[in-house]
Length: 172
Image (cartoon, rainbow, N blue to C red; front, side, top):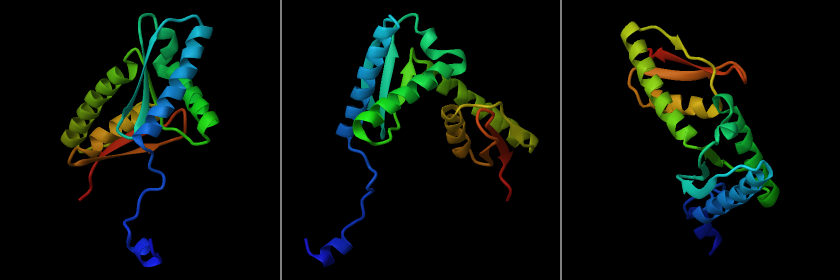
């Protein structure tokens, strides 16, 4: 390709990851987590998949509460460890999403309902509402719903682990 052709070619996202790469990341994470489950002598089936532009690993089975922990804290830690395992093998940061026993899926539904109730409250009262502190995953779930709702906007404030969402009416 000549230099002129190169300069007129459409730009591509150099950071874009192929579906094969995403699946490879989920396989690395699954192998790591399988070893972890063996070490702690815990049963669970591991599903590897991709969702959108993210690798996903789901651990399903009974008695997995210890892998979730209070408010998903252990789950968040396991997700970070799995991301580190991916980084160690690939040299690239991963956006891996780990779910255990459907915790994240259920939490996403609960947070969607909270976001809808909060948006309604803000629209009806015209006043700002501050939500309780949440993890990054939880905040993203709420922001997605608020951003899709006319008349309200949201932003995060504070620092971890006390970072929270503020929902307010849109100023015209």
